[in-house]
Image (cartoon, rainbow, N blue to C red):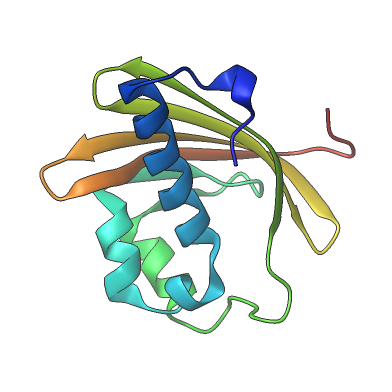
Length: 131
């Protein structure tokens, strides 16, 4: 899913693919509705600065996602995915997300842990256009 120009071959490509896969799983309404599946993907020290300006952590994310606030009818549309390995076991992803016409640039840091790739940090910034 990530643009070829953003991904290099070998272990770098594998790391980026794993982070992209994790990010897409977190955007899946069925995954978001299952706290155990969300917990597998979030690092214990997870922090997010949302498009609303709100600061989120694991507990606040679980409260919202397990509370039925996630819409199954309208999945988030993702484009312009780019991933870069910043250091061994650390991947930075950026992408454009469209959630029912609300468009935001997204930035995520994924860390490789003993249990697999986990989202450590995420930020969203509203935009009127992409590119």
